[in-house]
Length: 106
Image (cartoon, rainbow, N blue to C red; front, side, top):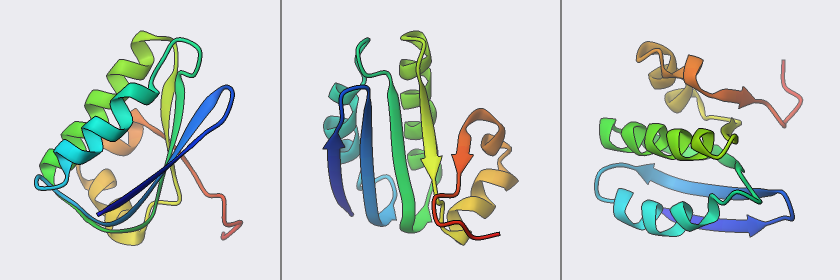
C-alpha cells in the first residue's frame, strides 16, 4: 500500500492506495499516529484508491478514531471505494465515522 500524507494547519490528509490489510497496518500506524495532535485533531483519510480492507485495517481505523476523539477531533473517511464502503456498511462501522464524497458524485 502507498501512504501519502499532507499536513495543513488544522487537519491532516492521508491518501491510501492499494490493499489495506494486516500486512500494511504497522506502516499505516507509524505514518498516521503521529499526525493526531491536540492542534490538528482532524484527519481526512482518502480511501478512493483502496481496493480491499480486512478486519485488522478496520480495527486500525477504529483505533485512530478513538485517539482523535480523545483530543476532541475525528477521522473523516473520504471517497471510500465501493468495496471499502460495503465492508464499512456490513460491519456497521460506517456509523462510527463521518464519510464524505469529495467527487460530487450522486
